[in-house]
Image (cartoon, rainbow, N blue to C red; front, top):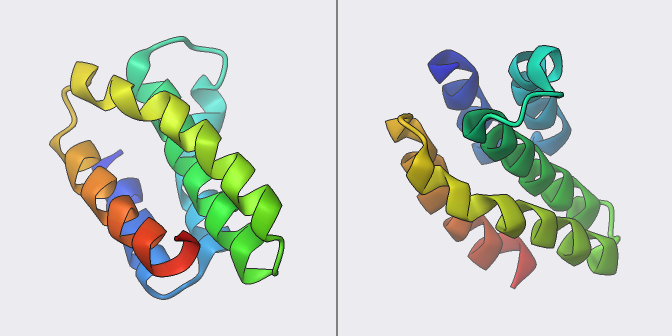
Length: 101
């Protein structure tokens, strides 16, 4: 999972938002029916990358709506044992400031 998360951040830095979504979906999809907090957090991160892609496409209202889905899952980060999730959270905060605010 750590490698996929690193790849996710790298792709977002390169503004390859759709590809970032795909990088995490490879890990999330096989476990998508699980209610484990790490799976739900991944779902939130995927939503964040979708929001950034929607913004890139000029669909601002939809981007903000999808970003809200990410925010719904964000509090679960504290319940996970994945330190990289905190790094992604901080990184996505900066992405929000750069692209969506």
